[in-house]
Length: 384
Image (cartoon, rainbow, N blue to C red; front, side, top):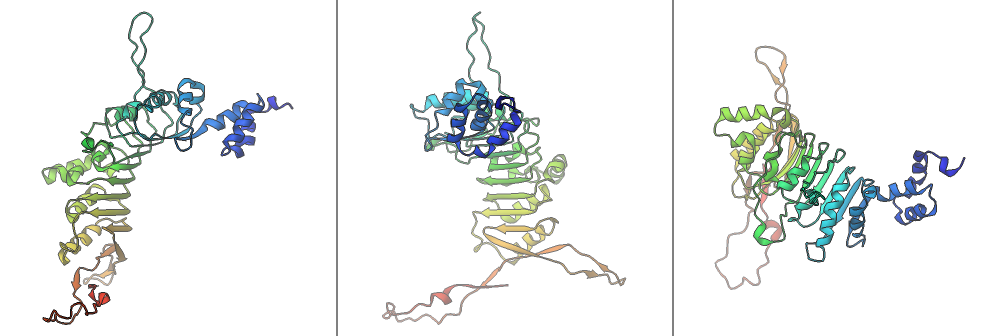
């Protein structure tokens, strides 16, 4: 059987071991017309472009070769900034993205102010003088998107063309311009956009825009304030429960969460427990000094809130890992049977520092330079 008569799937399988050897694949593509289609598909299937790798020129090739752009499945590009010399590359990147409609994973590490590359390029005027409006590209296979753009109109429109997206990662750095470091105005994302989203990593202010998605894991940067949660933003308890019922099916899916906050930790934790009752892993970092504010009542309040989360297995507050243990069975006084109590009880970290016993201060300051300080004993001895 001639090589040209072999099924394409068989040739693809024979060349698969060379997928990570781009120079070998390029040589195979040039060696034989029968092997060229399979080698070319493997050569352009997974692309990682950067100035360091000296392969950014591939962007220019993809912009003018729709046949090659359609072969790309995973695409990652690093561009340093929007200098005049780099601007043509951004324009070519915009055209290339509009042609790579078979993408499954896209990572754009470019200037945060260049979100316009996600919009379709401007169409040229037709020969009859009519204006051709650009048609947005559709990405039915795209599942993972990573970029450092804010959630603006360009990104929101792009999300509407990726119905299979399950993972979204946005950078918290908005722009290299110090005047543009403030959080932008949140753009509304229609509920029909990204209906399958399961994981989100990025600024906390975007969380309300994703409330109707079946999120399972969120890792938030920036400040998670109470007004970003549906149960805490309502003016009354009745309205809070109404909002929770509207998002119950989606909020109940969230299992993993990490965030930073300037809000009162106990109050925020209570709002999280209402909004996301099935959390398994929760990590909170607070800007408040816990060694100044907490007391026994503070930690007891948190432990009580944690006990309302039946599936919670790990909790960390400002680097302090909390431990849990099963509660003993409580016996009913009216019967001989044991009545099970809550499945877990959470053990608070040390709450009352006991000052180390140091000798009384010496009023004589003459020998201060010769005094041997016991730094080991100076540390506070924490105990329950």
